[in-house]
Length: 142
Image (cartoon, rainbow, N blue to C red; front, side, top):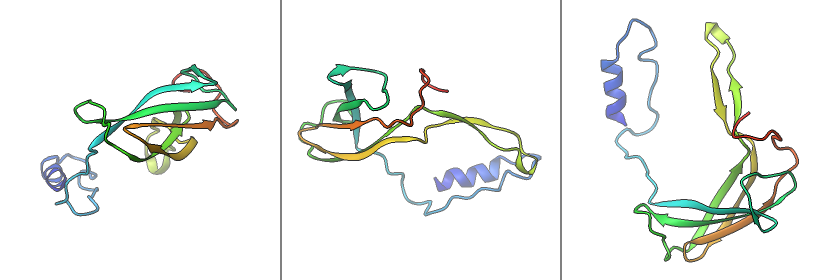
């Protein structure tokens, strides 16, 4: 990461004043921590039926598994998985402060559930009740 910052500051000189107004915080010699395993969601059910839409106050059961980076299931993995389930993304628009421009971006900021579950032989499951204050419009985004 240190080399990327150094090269971008040195080689991306433009007519503007902002080309060098960023900095990398931390030790640039450290390598990026990449995950050694993948977590996959196998199925989502409400009241025992497969679903792709969560409704308010529904009892949701989520089943998942842990996989090696090669794709095969990590059947020898036992431990704890920490999960967060978010509501669908919201479109957020920035303010035009200090002469800047509006920028609209999508952000998933509403947490529906946060917890942990035990992983046994690479499999886990957890359930939660969907809160009432969710985005009620159907679709992937607002």
